[in-house]
Amino acid sequence: QVTLKESGPALVKVTQTLTLTCTFSGFSLNTRGMRVSWIRQPPGKALEWLARIDWDDDEFFSTSLQTRLTISKDTSKNQVVLTMTNMDPGDTATYYCARSTKHAGSFDYWGQGTLVTVSS
Amino acid sequence: SYVLTQAPSVSVAPGQTARIPCGGNNIGGKSVHWYQQKPGQAPLLVVYDDRDRPSGIPERFSGSNSENTATLTISRVEAGDEADYYCQVWDRSGDHAEFGGGTKLTVL
Image 1 (cartoon, each protein chain N blue to C red):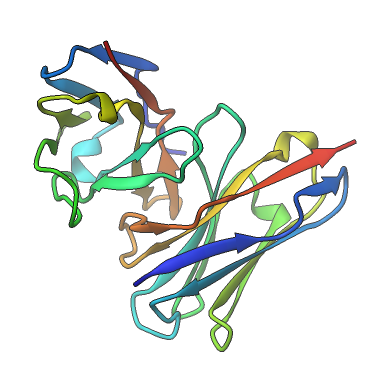
Image 2: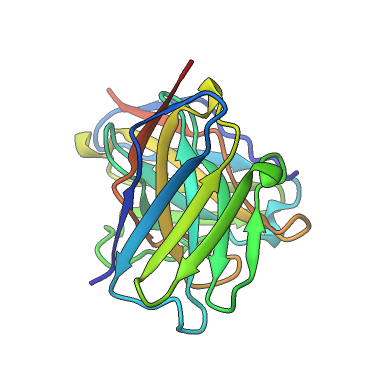
């Protein structure tokens, strides 16, 4: 059974750095083909893909946010960590992590999401 | 970046067929995936690779993709199908994922 769960602060201040952790089970990021992405959704708005890390350590980032994002994995803990620098109220959103198994593949399993509010 | 265009809303009566389009330049050459999202819930994959259904998704959900439009079709619509629906592709030119703006399906 594949599960993912996001964790991190519910509230961050403007200019601070956000660190989110995705803890997953039911698969391993050591397994060829496995990939974990981060996706966010501002309240009442559409989904926005942020970043992805693959089993072979390949990393991919949103063009508009790549200068602010880092992504890493700890395969021993089954975790993927996303950091986003210089937070702004416009970054207020629910942040999801999701799994995919092909380069251009779908996100077949999602976490429940975690709401992050950026306050000034 | 690659742009996916979805109509903001679609309305359909129960028992009828809902068609939700997703427009993109030569989208027929890409694999399109569709997600259903109900209020307060995470998205749920309902169609992948244009027309395949994950286990547990009813056969009422189907997909097609040709030229500049991909379409999610929901047959025999039920009240429980009311949700936001998002299309998604992987843009190989920029090596990133793209989502459409979402379509709110209202069951009258």
